[in-house]
Image (cartoon, rainbow, N blue to C red; front, side, top):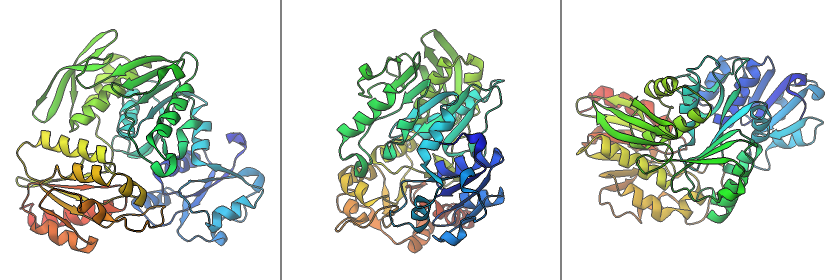
Length: 461
């Protein structure tokens, strides 16, 4: 890859993706000319356009800037693009350097001391917490995040000149994280996922073990207790973390008071007393322990760790409370894997004991729905009422016989239904349960605004 200093123009194929948009913003702030394509307009592409980035939504090579010098230009693409994409194939035929997103992220992150957060669940929240803690220090950090941080209002945190740290979400999809060579790394979880890429869990484990083997000499690895990775594959010093189990980093005296979690944080060097977390969900307390472990290993002072946990505001679409009245609470979450659904619904139940819960879920990917239909059904059975939306295919072609009904027919819950998107608002308006959840990684986020509007209209009754 050309040195970043010599690059003047950067074109993004799939610029609206959360990881792609962070890179686009980074190059824009670096003073480069930035433009790109995405399939559909979203709130994120709207924001990029408002920031002065040229975005279009037709797969048309005539939309690619024609005046850019190929020698000063690179193109960045997401592997989610179809092979017959016209713009992608045009770039393949040109004397313009073409890179996967993960390669470019690695080039940037590996220039500094990287902190990489990997795992099939929890990596966005944990990496955002790490960035929030480090941002409380004079040197700060840079960060490429897998969601929009509510503390920063962005998925990108630009590093100060003297900042030694870059925090990056290490994505296992398409083995993207193998481009990272971090100084500190954490693995939150290791469940079967992306079987369309890996085939089986053994190959996922193999890829994670390759990732931890790339930690730099003298580096450190933090593993959630119970994550079964062969640590003989890394030269890094290994630490463990857990919510309550015995570990190098864990909570002590954890309790819920007035909607906040209070706990003491055990570290290898003693206790950081009186930590407070105002963000909901026990699973997020566990994520905070992992984030604090990375910060502690990075040499961050206890006061900054406590402050970064206490004022953490969350990530858009992660336990995102959009409506609260005396009678009704509405929460949106990105959960799209059975284990994520289970953790989210269980956390909601623990926080709002005795309340009846309606969950609206949009399955994401034909292959994931096929591979985990039984597990999805079991997780959704934890609800009091379930509404499934039609499956969101994302990058995949249809698989015969696979649909949202594949999950529905396996569910034991009595109060369950499959509805088209246009009927869901009416169903929400009539819903009598105290809590409504929307869950999924497709375009279900477009339901948030109309749901909030109907709840405001009816005052959440």
